[in-house]
Structure formats: C-alpha cells, structure tokens
Image (cartoon, rainbow, N blue to C red; front, side, top):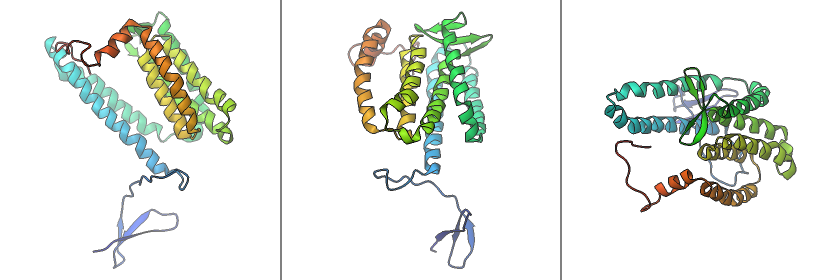
Length: 268
C-alpha cells in the first residue's frame, strides 16, 4: 500500500491512502546539510537538537554519578540507592521546570534578560562572601541554610539568554566588530571574570563554551571564532601552568604520568 502526505492550509500534515482515508501522522524534523544559505533554519529541528542532547546528557550524567558514588556509599555502610535519590530528584524537578519554561512567551524572556544576568552575577559574587564554600581549591559554592548551591549554574543560563537578547537588538550589525564587542564580548568576559574569582577554571571553560555556542548559532562571522581560538589556547596554557592543582589534573589524564585510579575513591 502506498501512502502520500498532503497538508491542508493552516493545518497539520495528514496522510492518506488511495481510498482517501485520513491517518494522523507525526512529522519528524529533517536535518539538511549545505551552505546554510539555501534554506532557513527549521525551528522544529532546532528544538529537537536542543532537547534530545539535553535529555541524553542528563541520563548519562545520572549513570556516571551513580557509578562513581556506589563504591564509596557501600564502603561507608550506606545504601547507594538512597544516596542516589537526591540527584534523581534534582533531574526530575529540572525536567518539570524545563517543561514549564518552554511555555514562557519569548517577550517575557527578553524583558527578564538583563535582570537575570545582573542577579546571576550578584549571586556568583557570593562565593567570595562568608556564605561561600570551597571544594578542591575552588570557591564556587554558596551555602544558604541547608542548601548548597553552585551560582555558576544560574550564570550559564542567564548569560545565554542575555547574549540572545543583545544580539537580537543588534541583528543588523552582526558583522560589526565594535557593536558585537560591546554586545557579546563584554558580557562574556564579565561572566568569566566572575567565575575565575573563585579560581574555578573548569567551570569558566564550560561557561565560555556555552556562550560561544550561543553566538555561533546567532550567526556571527565564523572567522571571529578562529581568532578567539588562537587567543584562548595560550591563555589556557598560562592558567594551567599558574596552578599546581590544574597541572596535576592535566597530567592525570596523560598516559604514563600518573598512578592508576584509586578504586576506593572512584571518579567520573
């Protein structure tokens, strides 16, 4: 039996057979490869390219976290599944929040972009206050009563939304270096500086990658990213060499430069 798909004006795709029977269908996004100029971006494709990797990363993160803490929990006489309940609850809560956020009108996000970014920077600065807590030599946690929070997680989201807002305001000047330096480079450097005040280079790199991904999708000239890479590599080398802990972490992943993994304290 052969099938054909047609679309009513303003309606959803409808599949019909030769007898004219209508059968509901689910339209999956198609990824088209090319120069990027022949077709406009499909918002449905973009949506799934964001949602599916996020779900996969959440799943594998849960598996890796459970694997890393199981041996330690058993050695301490604890039930590994009970200790696993907290990150599982966080992921489930995050999915519920994400489902609600995607329903928020875009104009609301535009209005909240600046307040969110400023609030996230203030929250990040609390790591240097008496509320701040250090882990592994990095001050990137804040203790608010019984709750331990990592402000940089909020800063990542706020920075991406703020960059989207700034680029959309200057959409006609995306190729202008001066305009984009103010709209994009300054917020990114401010956010990275706020994170590096706590000496957390790893988190700063994640923030930078998220920000660069946002401006890449926004359509900034690709040659600019090559210049950024050439500037970033020597900067990263200097930051690593300036901290013995970072040097040890880099050497730990190189073959023949470190001992085998400690089975009593597994890591991800």
